[in-house]
Image (cartoon, rainbow, N blue to C red):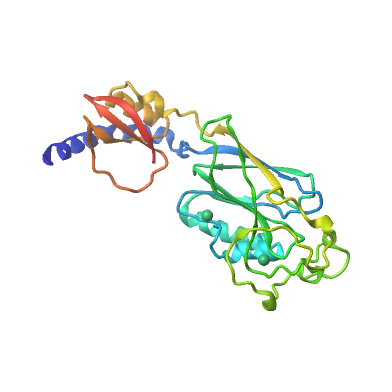
Length: 302
Ligand SMILES: [Ca+2]
Ligand SMILES: [Ca+2]
């Protein structure tokens, strides 16, 4: 029972190798992963009185968790939430996506005023998106998107729920002296450093908005859950490859067609039998099901 599929796989490789070897040089400069797509994000501050830090964002896979409710904030998320430390989180996310895949960045170059919308673009072959932006005139409040899915088809736009969170790292004194020294948080005072005496040692929770316990004016308060809006549009795939076109082709022709799009082909189901495959992820590999020598289904990329 086992010998037959292996023999077929070996035969398949014998079939694949010459075709790919011939086709590869023609695409030496076109080896971008086919699933790379360009996305445009629009991020709007919908408060009446709060500025937001330029949004730190990452597009990533399930192997990266930027933050999670009921979990402690990472050092980078803490730095943003307490002190507007955008570069610190940017460095943390850049290191994370460098080792785990994806792309990260900062969506703007200045604080985002009430009512202002900023637009930024990124390209990625990853499926998920996270964002962190400080509600600046708070102790450790931020808004965030936690690993939500990006639109999967070109032209599609998704609207995201952007929740307000308390990072759980600084006690909410709501005093000007403990808030960052941004002019829009009040003319005098403030600090850009974390005060150990105010360490909260908690976990990320939904923010309860301002409760009026300090000297911050109520003009900085907001309606719970109403801080920012985010939409992301999948503008276009970065190649014109369409793996769906392989269905109906003979294995030979499908292999050649895939190669012409910079893809390699891997048979994961052969005549109804699941094939043993490695679990590595190759962005420009298309996995197909083959029956009687013909591609009958595309089982995804990777
Ligand atoms: Ca998470
Ligand atoms: Ca807090």
